[in-house]
Image (cartoon, rainbow over all chains, first blue to last red; front, side, top):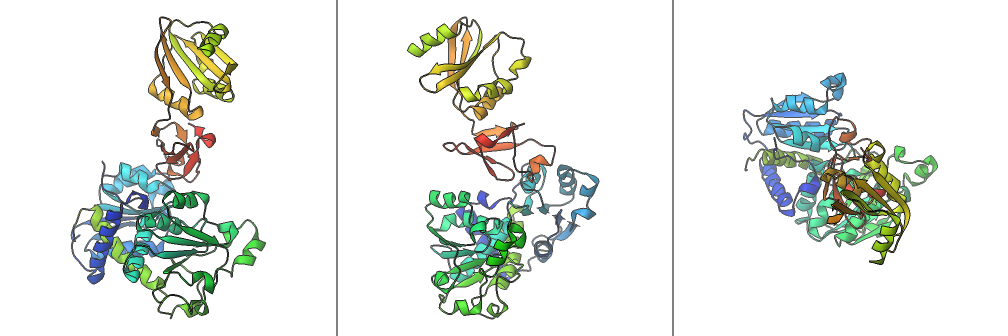
Amino acid sequence: MKSKSFVSINDLSREKILSLLDTAAKFEENPNRDVLKGKIVGSLFFEPSTRTRLSFETAANRLGASVIGFSDAATSSATKGETLKDTIMMVSSYADVIAMRHRLEGAARYASEVSQVPIINAGDGANQHPSQTMLDLYSIKKTQGTLEGLKIHLVGDLKYGRTVHSLLHAMRHFNPTFCFISPNELRMPEEYRLFCDKNNIPYTETTEFNEEVIADADIIYMTRVQRERFSDLMEYEKVKNCYRLTNAMLTNTKENLRILHPLPRVNEIAYDVDDNPKAYYFQQAQNGLYVREAIICDVLGINI
Amino acid sequence: MNENKQQAMQVSALRNGTVIDHIPAEKLFAVVNLLNIADMNSNVTIGYNLESKKLGKKGLIKISERFFSDDEINKISLVAPNVVLNTIRDYNVIEKREVKMPDEIDNLIKCNNLNCITNNEPMATHFYVANRDTHTLKCRYCEKEVNLDDIKLL
């Protein structure tokens, strides 16, 4: 029953990450390759996520595969009380690989244990979203030419933001220096600060987000500060505009600086940043396609 | 040696069975519950607040004609990580071992994360030791860490 699945960024070695990024670069050169002709990709979105689903389904189509599945648990038999195991058993008898999004944490790991075909985790609750992390890494490597020794500033919600946690974990292989910029309420959790200490990753922390703080950054990774994360709404009102990046702030930043954001953005990046060549968030999302093509091929053992 | 003698005075000898020793006094009744001692027919002696050089006050449980499986022993380690388990046959200690937390714990602990798949599907839980020094375990599924002091047994 064991198959080669893609569940957690923490399962990936440095070599594995780099080889997936190399494959993704080949897909960027030519995204249309019929290597999955005759294969079926299951796309099981127990929780809606239009952006991620379209990216996976586009990847499958560009590889020549057909797609089956659902985009919302309301249209699946999960509403009738079917267990995840039963749904996965059923679909894995039809599809050659399954990409799944689920609101429960650990759902993809469990599915990978019961499935006869590889599982690709397209997000399991607040836990993991490893294809997002891979596209973040791809974007960093592509814009900086390397993943080694970079100065990465993480901004906004560092407490609940799973993308920043996964990125931090994945970057442990590449000697980064981090700067954590967040309001006190959304500070980087102790678990991750201890992780940095244990892995000899230098970091600084600040609640100030201004020109001076970002002057030496190679990457600024912005995240959304969400109102519902605050127990005290007064506190939210105080900080909501403090973690907003504007074009004026970028004047004295490094030439190679690029700005990333997992999207969707609300107001944490001003629209006047969009035309700055340092803005990279839209290309970043596009890179998701190449990375997901690489992941699908990898779990199916197809070399490009 | 001294401590052993003293202990012999406090608790009478056992012919065949198990002596669980060096239980921190405050964990004694948790271990008693865990082993379902209330439901046992064997002859059981429970010592509470016995003097111990190592622990100050300790607990001790002697169970006649009863030996424990690995699973049961593993369970003890989750409540009291460093107890000593003596197996007695014909008045002799034939085995003395310090109970150690296993590297992986199958289906003994409930995950504290309500959004973990293990709390929503009919399935077994699996934990592994994330940090032995800080007594931290990690759920294989939701990847959340939990301290031994905060765990709930299934």
